[in-house]
Length: 541
Image 1 (tube, rainbow, N blue to C red):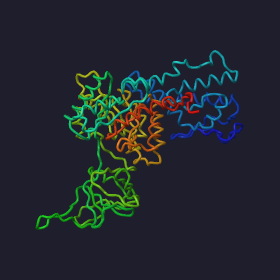
Image 2 (cartoon, helix red, strand yellow):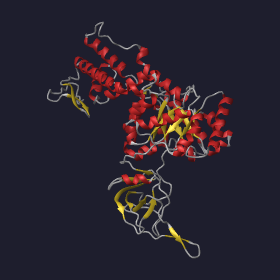
Image 3 (tube, rainbow, N blue to C red):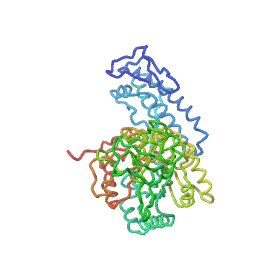
Image 4 (cartoon, rainbow, N blue to C red):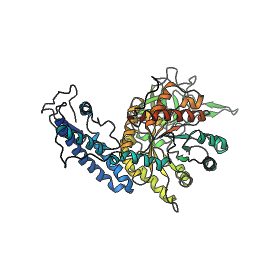
């Protein structure tokens, strides 16, 4: 839908209809709009409401069979209506509503139809067209029902909110927390409302000791702290690295050979000394070799969180051992070069990876996680079937339990972003659910320049579904690791107030970071709640 954009008296000729842009075709929504006329505004809003209601209902009907929790039905319908609304370009309409003192629809996420109804009803009064059958202003409690549902779903996931702030703080526990009870107690005492145990590290015995410490500390302090156990998931990494003679760093223009199995790194001399094989290019191998069969020429391949960016120049590069390799050319690296280290991650931002998000290790870990965790962090979720897979595995392990753990889907790929509405429906339609914006892998996969935009859109979509969001990756990273935050990190932490939970990673200054984040979130809540500015009295002037 395209509205007039310049001045309030502009008209769109009938030859340029207001359109609804959609993949299934272009549908006319109207043909003439005088932005200064309340009658025209009323007419277009009524037509918009009718379209949003019908299109939203059609989407909701497709989802209905996947929703088992009656309490999630209204949230699912609001999400469907929000998706229908956001298929239109409403910017000119927003500007036209402002001079009338009406909502510009900019904070409509949690309450699509009530907000539209409130604006339409007021416009009817302005136009003098109100009548008993037209007045459809939503009751106050109905208008704020979406906010209540988001709060309810957040409390289901994270427990009651602390007295001083709405946003929770999650902290990743280090290995030492299994043996250092004082560390765990201080983390909770400083303000952590949830702790994260990364199942990629440590053992079930260590995890159990960590959880025992958490339970002991919360009992002593009379507080609560949820436990999220993060399944390791698929880890696509490079193996050992063989470098050309006299080269220690990779530069732009260099070539890297990527093989399906560990290359021959060298031989033993007669005296037992290891002699590296002479090679022309850097060589390494992929820990998930089947992915290499999906690559074609010009496919981008990123290494070490994108510090080294490459493209495929040959998928069958011949080498003396007769085993063809993938030849990559480096398209981006620091001018000083980058060390190619074993164990660094591989990303394939333009390749659809048909991999199960649950590895054999994850299935083994689930035997413990399903009975000890309050929340399960789910990596590499891309399709609704991935949600169903985890739910099925939890059902196998939930015999005798009243409820299964909640699920938090980590959004890490472009496919996960595009499938987010269905991921929400399949998960929240059956159990307590949240979304984590995993900004590290997501930035590499979609491009750093798109991260802020997509982060906002994820927040909006989740608010429309009344689903809590975790803001994660590198929050106050310099403070946690070095004791001093950067200016940009402080701003990022303040912006995180729009989520329901903020995650801090482990580090030597984690206690100080929790205290500072608690202070920042508490201060910002007086100025902003989600997208809504709070007009607290200013004290600086």
